[in-house]
Length: 145
Length: 103
Image (tube, rainbow over all chains, first blue to last red; front, side, top):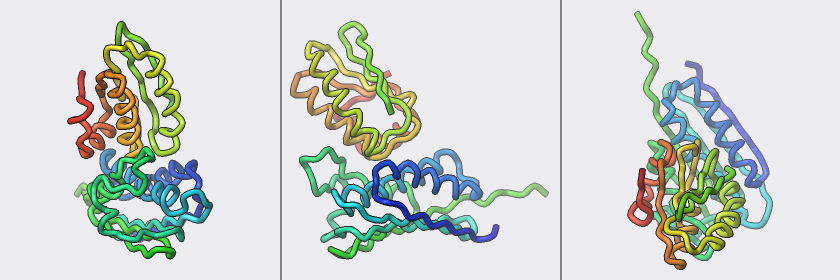
């Protein structure tokens, strides 16, 4: 299968979360995911984009970039914002970590991304925004002889 | 998501459906809270999720928020028939120790 590439750039409106996860799900369909795998990808993308909207830009408006690339049976996703960034990435990726305990947040976003994807990393500096990279491997389609 | 609420005997059953994310959960919070507050005599609150197609961590936060409200009023909360996708997420979160799953 030829490598494929997708780049989406959109404003940090909550309404765009569904659009982003559905677009990525559609992009990875040629990799022959199971319904469960497709849902895992959608959930991980939804978490990452929600983080950009809610934490990256907070009340402000900014651009979110979603890039997807296929490489053989692998899907690679990069989701980035130019928002406030994360002061302590190691703390942020811990289950139930939240910066706003008074808000209604579960603090499970990064844990879900880590669990549902095969590879996961976060790069962030305060003031420079955040980049989340995730990958998932799918079973190659078996050709009948 | 647009929740449907039914009173069944002494129970409140809140039927969640469709896609549950940060945006849709935010829209439903006030409606569900108002329903709980106007039925403080309820024996149980059950969240039925058999028609939830998609959910992210907003569902976990949504349930914990409603659980806290119901707990203050002394009403036990249960999760009923979660869809495969919702169940996988909820099991990962450990929420079933707080809000048990019932048939």
